[in-house]
Image (cartoon, rainbow, N blue to C red):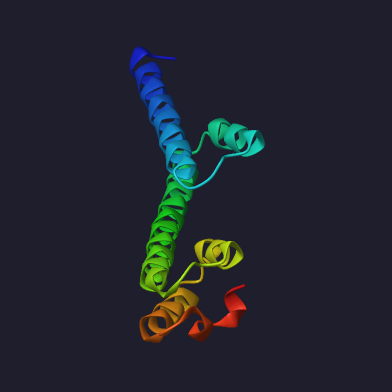
Length: 122
């Protein structure tokens, strides 16, 4: 193997390792990465595959941030109506369906008491 081929191979490996590290850091922003998944990512040698996984993780990360923001908005809208039951608070914070969260935001804006907020969140 010639020196330029070796250099190209080393650069390619460095890019792959860097993308795998970037992917792991992105995933860890929203969840714990199990060791099996970590090994699978670190063992991947195809940069295109890693790039695709990274793009998917980026979309999931954005959705996670948006759902967390909407859940926080609901809790802020309801906080003056009285103490929120812990199970209802956890249900709101665990919801990831953006359409459901949007509906809850609209209902929370109209609610004059916690009893007027949907029972199905508990």
